[in-house]
Amino acid sequence: MRTLDQARLPQPDLAEVEIGTVLQALADPVRLQIVRLLSSQGAAACGELDLPVKRSTVSHHLRTLRETGLLETHLKGNTRVSKVRREELDRRFPGLLASILDAAPAVPVPSEEEPGEADGER
Image (cartoon, rainbow, N blue to C red):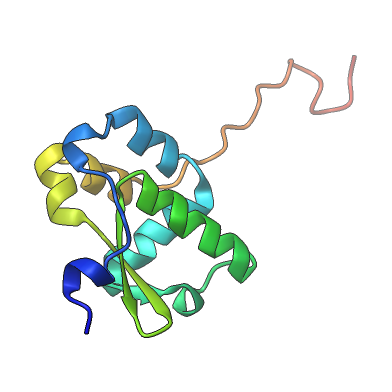
């Protein structure tokens, strides 16, 4: 029978993870959406996440997030269940994850038109 440590997939020690690595992982919109979903759901398997990409792509993003230290993944039978390493991340980078997850999406800024262009004048 497996112990909890044997059932957990390898993940980096957060003391060795740089903030740039975390920010780079969260810069991808799908990975950010995964972290937001897991933060609200607690834990989920790949197929339980409602995302606009194929399951194989979700699996790739989950692996990337685990390898960068953001997620912890456990085996439950043949299923990999992932959750955000929230407490550990908050100790290592206080307030970072909350700021990123709570940030409103960017609103596109309309480009400024030259006077008269909107009326078709030149």
